[in-house]
Image 1 (tube, one colour):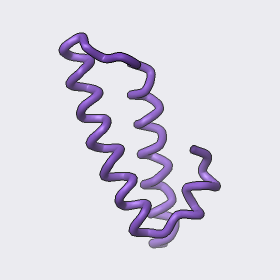
Image 2 (tube, one colour):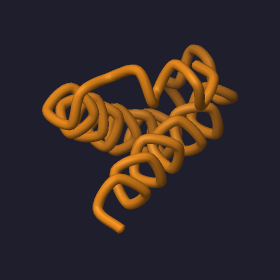
Image 3 (tube, one colour):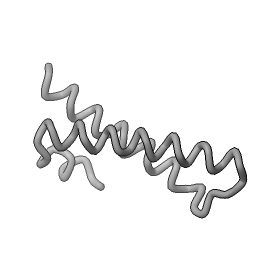
Length: 62
């Protein structure tokens, strides 16, 4: 998702998405360690999405 779409979300939606992404990253890392990951490139994509969500939240605080 592009950063512009992240900015359209409310603060609560952003926090929820960030929480979901952090859980997904945890699960993907676990799957990678077990050798059962279906899409290993999703880990990098999820990390970038989490960073975007956190960046937008920080922009709104400051």
